[in-house]
Length: 361
Image 1 (cartoon, rainbow, N blue to C red):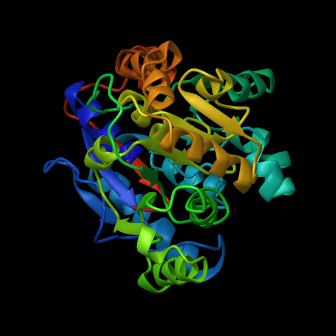
Image 2 (cartoon, rainbow, N blue to C red):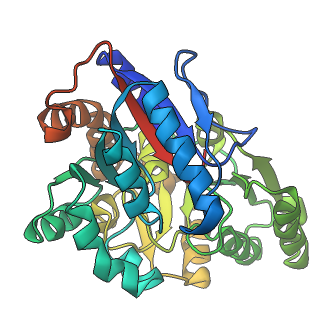
């Protein structure tokens, strides 16, 4: 989704773009017609014949489209170093975008966390979504820049829609986004608010995996209270119909869902995530509960669904709209930060290419 917003911005600044992916998904975010999308052979393991095919295809694509700068969106990939060497062998500048929360590589793969400073020093630059990451990388001699994600949404204004509608938006992923927790929260909330409804906007990308979530909802006894909306490139209509936005992520670096929800004047119930500045402003537009505390989250959701005055007050909170205004300023911030990044020095804005690469389409 981030790339679907970034690519038009780069084009508006005069760059030509090409998107390189490893997985082709029929349900994907729209791209400009003049942005080719190239599917590379998958390289889950960085060794053997599989990676050789991937490396050859990557090099051929970079040369074919005359790419000058590669914006690499898979910072935790085991193939980061090898893909970087392929790009540099083609004379392409290599810029890494880190979408992870601080310390995530340490939690997932300690060895990768230890080796990352040595690898990232070889890159022409690194984008981080948090100042803490940029400070740590710069302290290790890495050319890092704090640049937030672009956010594009329509602000709904101060409102508190009637009804008992909860919305959850994200990828069906039990490790990070945790939609099962959202289902558990609903199961607790309906004990006090029987007509509460939860709309889950998103998908795992697999029908079989999605069916397991529907089975889980039935096991929790709330299958009639849940709408599985599936993948949606522009979830604005779901925000507009909702009374409360629910976020159950284990971690986020720059939550676009949070900022979009606030832009729609939605009160938010979320697990506490210390890396998000808007969430730390507890009390205005957000109610934050401890990570994994399904019962506390259910109580917070219930309190909002049963108290329209409280819901309206939270939706109109100064913190809520301050966060939304901050998100709208991201467009200017991103453009300004990018113009100062050394990776763009010498890359002409016309007649050359800029590519984005992602583990997933």
